[in-house]
Structures are given as C-alpha cells and as structure tokens.
Image 1 (cartoon, rainbow, N blue to C red):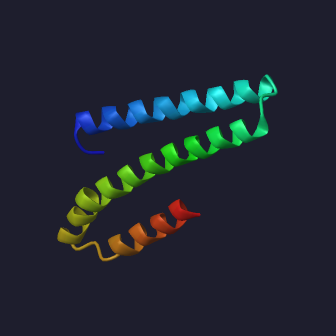
Image 2 (image 1 turned 30 degrees about the vertical axis):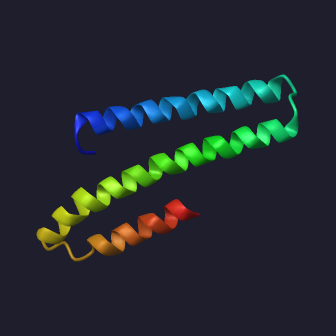
Length: 88
C-alpha cells in the first residue's frame, strides 16, 4: 500500500466492515427479521467491495506502473487475473 494516511483509511473501513459483520451475527442470534439481515449483508458486501476497489486502484496506479517501467511483462496479466478473482 501507498502512504500511511491511505493505509489508515483502509484499516478504518475494514474495522467498520468488521462491526457490520458482528452486527449481522447479533441480528441472527437475536432472530431478527430476515429481510433486515439480508439488507445488512448487502451493505457489508458493498463496503468490502469498496475496500477491494480502493486496493485495486492503488495497485493499478502504483505497483502496476512500476512493474511496467521495470519491464515486468506479466504485470498486466497478473492484474487481470486478480481482477477476475475480485469480481467473482
């Protein structure tokens, strides 16, 4: 990851996702409404997807450019493989 501020923001996002997951666990334990639980699952998934996209963007702007500059021909293939895994 890049700068310390960016890393700290990602860690904060992940802590919020962690809190959402704990909330979902509590909702299930307390047998709350299934629709409400599904809504929270969707929100947690969206938040985690956003973290992944931020990391993907950071990688594209820093690591990928550096790899291309250094002549690492497989860098784009590696990025595309990671994108395919991320989107599944």
